[in-house]
Length: 446
Image 1 (spheres, rainbow, N blue to C red):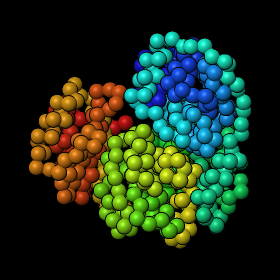
Image 2 (image 1 turned 45 degrees about the vertical axis):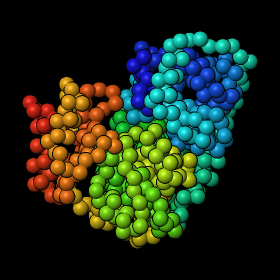
Image 3 (image 1 turned 90 degrees about the horizontal axis):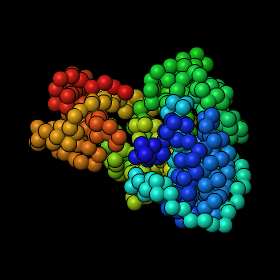
Image 4 (image 1 turned 120 degrees about the vertical axis):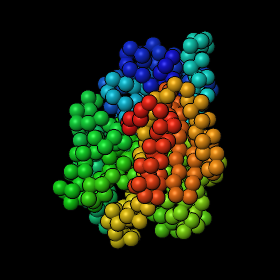
């Protein structure tokens, strides 16, 4: 089944994922988790009712008491699963994928993520279809917003009124965000809050600059202090400063750690992904903050954060994680901490970001290759005099430049991120590495 991905289950409905498969996946998940109860939430896609009905039927036929929390974000699903002490939770979503996709994102008790090897076991049980009968479980409904509001408001330490633009991309967060933030001193300029599963204005993927055009224009035109662009299931956010510039995910992670430091946190660890700018360690050392670089992907980030008891973490993809939110990603908390930092420093977002722009970065470039292990080995040998790491693919470190080259989880692709002291060196090393990866041509940026 190709619908079983590295971190979740996802496919086109109904050609790849239909009601029968959803039912079987539910039976398999109930067996694998040995679940007595489970929380279920959905995003806004057209296929949500089809998958929800089939999946909850499968849970109930497995004897699982099922709590439906309705149309919510993934962070709300995580929080509810953890705080209500349920055995497992599932979000019916395809995140930022096109509208024809849908799927399932699981977590265990305490919002602990389910890694790839466990998903493969659920796949095996799904395909075996040897499910035992059980006393039929119940189905109840629950409004998670009041408890979730109390949870995130603990991080809303700003007092002044802030004008912000929020783009929910016609996806799930538009259905509840105004209500969720109603008691905060926020002047929200809503962009695409009308829920529409066709995503008529742009895809719910804020990582692509083409999907940020409207929010950038709106921030500048409205005189807002910042913009926040959310993805399809609300677990990622990309920030836009007051001048309409995108704030990279690694810079945002620095600001979040600075905000927590300003609130009195000391001597803590921050989890960063292996592609993040070298400036992170340099800035954090000034604050007495330790860092740990991790493999890309929420299951790896969360596992390492729990092991380190890291206070927060972040990825270039716009996922920001917090120990005090069960080590899960939370766009709401990230927004509140950024506003708090701006208020305490008395500076606009662009001025907070400016000191972080020390190096020049390539962004992530993708190369299709025939033999990923061979290419990585050749590059390792070519730069044998460098400081090298194999956290996630190959990282090469020199004093004035470094790069990470990591393989895709699902296709014969190498992803390159390169950073250098200046633009000239960046272009020189980018050309060199690109030619080594793909001698007959250069990669294309996604």
